[in-house]
Length: 373
Image 1 (tube, one colour):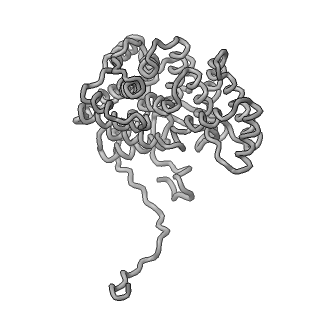
Image 2 (cartoon, one colour):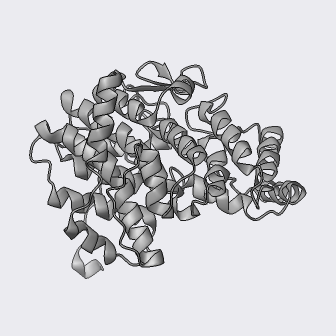
Image 3 (cartoon, one colour):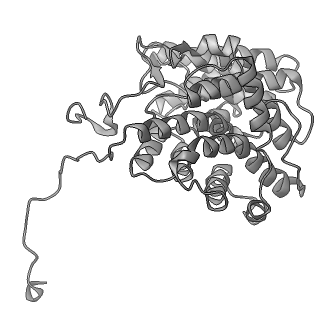
């Protein structure tokens, strides 16, 4: 650590170095290996970004074609994993399903040594949407789906797997963009958990499972689910204005606003907002977009807070017919690329991550004699 922690949460502490990502260097930027996320979202596919993060450079056309074919061939699940998924209760949180599925895959296909790390990372990237889709369709609709879909993209594969139908091209494009935006974010809580696990020289599946468990919390990946629960309360922009004003007066937290690192804006928000507006057109619940806009403006005016990536992703996913409980798993399908990249980077120059702590308990004292108790 570069300096003692002056407050909880390690805010402002440099805990290591990375060549993978920069976040908020001017208060508002996000770059993956030097490329701005806006440029990548506009001009690249998620598979290209995954390759960039995991292998260090954007692929050429041949490398991309081969990589997509490789990932496509890795979607099928072992029968033993299907059996486990069928035994997970229907009321289980989907993030817990992914945590279990990732761990089980590590039992069935262990990373026996670090020379297998690329294969393990690619397998998880291809298989995690299959894990979620298989459990979701089985527990909700009693369907045993074929996870080896013929979709050319991960975005199309995950939409077909969870919704059980041919995904509209517009939805595939939107999800592809969303996966790019969520792919990597430097030393956030879940990525740091992955690196701590990797720093012990543990396996890839254990590290990714640690990331999934950390992302599950509402202060991290679960924020988009909380944002959806908020905006769904209101039937109009006027209702939202009155309702959220009341929340602010009661000092209640409004999820999806502000950020630990960005100080000016979250560069991902404008892209999600544009998609939410586009998908709201003609939707039966199109009012959710003006509701969201009203809440965004109120938080800016009253608290000086900006919407982060989680806020508009909520209505954006909803407009595509995605169940709220699946919002955070979509985050996993993307962020596994960043997590695995950090595991690889940690291993390449490893030191055990073991910070100290400032002790604030009682001073040294003797154990009292039994007679005095």
